[in-house]
Image (tube, rainbow, N blue to C red; front, top):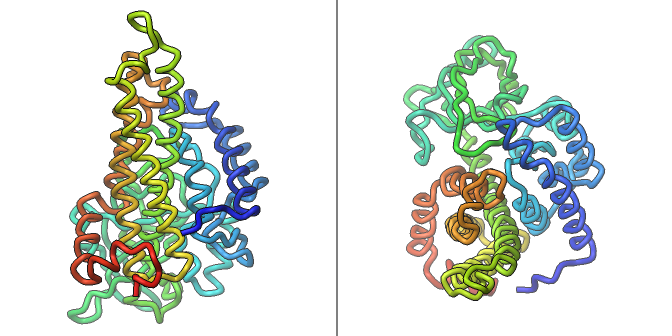
Length: 397
């Protein structure tokens, strides 16, 4: 595996790094404001993200995106992961499934979302359907000219700011339940937020609960009426992409945590010497450095597999490995760094404290650690150990 970056990729990394560096000074203010950011700061963040060509990496240039490879996604998200308080969300973008839309849907939803004129939110999780997406209870029943969608959706990230939702619901066809993605405008009668809870992390966007009892036209089916029952495929592609992104951001978080903790441990003196001289301080940091490099290589190799067209099921398993390992080790790294900082590490002005809260969710959303372990274990049985662990494309089949 050759992880040497091309000149264009190095340029992309520098642009992403510059953007992340510009976000860092806003972290403490966002924390103190409960995650909210002044409108003028939001506008400047969005302007800079567009100026640096960092918006819409997962979409084709003809739709207003950047057309990045998965490796380029990883390069950017690793830099974004250095930033706390979810400030990088403010750059904007659009979920990858919108590319599956009809030409009319692309014009009405994807293009304006990438242009910053609209905002989307993905509505999948429910009260009784989290890790087990097959338990989705939202229903879409055919009515004259369209569908009546009923159900409740939890943890709809950015739903408080979105003007349309991507809704997973089962179309009822006799005894069959056909998983289908719908585009539902936020102002559609019968779409309402019924809860907007506070969470452990303090981000600019919330994760509200939506209740739906609304009628949408046939044209609301993502990809057109012929895509009824095919929602799982689009959702699967979304999960794989998101898991790789999470792994990359966790790597970025570990890099920043180690940067700041090591600087502190070298500077801080106790008993007449830098605390870095004590193995109780230096060994946990050494362990986290090893974790960071291992997570980084695993994530980069997964991205390369994706770009090289490796078998989709093996990429799926490798993305689960990357998310599982990176998210769990990043949280351990944050915990160790808080300990290195001592009392200062327990102050919200310290990035280690914020990361300790924020990284916890990476072991939950887009598939819990337990779900990732199930995916990897299934791959070991169904694909075989050699293929599941392969680094040589010839071994992947």
